[in-house]
Image (cartoon, rainbow, N blue to C red; front, side, top):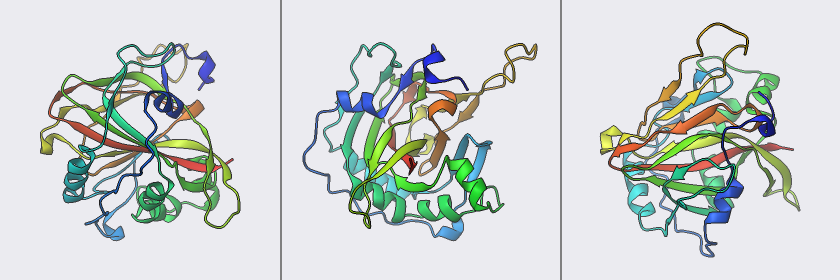
Length: 263
């Protein structure tokens, strides 16, 4: 895929979020991650090769319900009506914080770390090189930049690409943070039609095989909301154009972070 500067489509990045979220000094007292399904009941499933991977039932419906009740008490900030030049139109409420402890809990306190580093993909094991190629390098964990999104009826996120960001990854064993970069977006859906949320699907638009091809463009890939499902999709230079469709009824709640690899 061409470099970001060659896209005329809009982009979205963590830096954009930081500029529109007031700094929060106190970390939330996040609820415990319980109950969770055992590792044996979870797996990585590919929706689009090297681009979109899902984990069904990553969180239980009970855990999602508990978190939604808690997240509703946070000081969410509404997206400005007019985005900055080059940014996609995004209409939602969100909360953002740098919380390395929560990111580590989400990574190691669930099965995510084991699934990403050692789990089978579509029932097949990957060797070390294939796994690094898939995730874009040596995976360190999750971006401490935690974002909470709430989409009410009529809110949406227009077509855009997610940028990759350089980060200083906190290390429990090194004396200094590790230079890292983000390679995959992590979206954890807390609501779905089962909780009264209609619409809000995440839709990806694959590139045509060739600009000179006479074949019609590939069909969009629509990912419907499932309570507790984790969705990982590649971002940066290889990001696929995507959008969050308008919510028609209810509320769409999402927890967002990113996979970080050694830079």
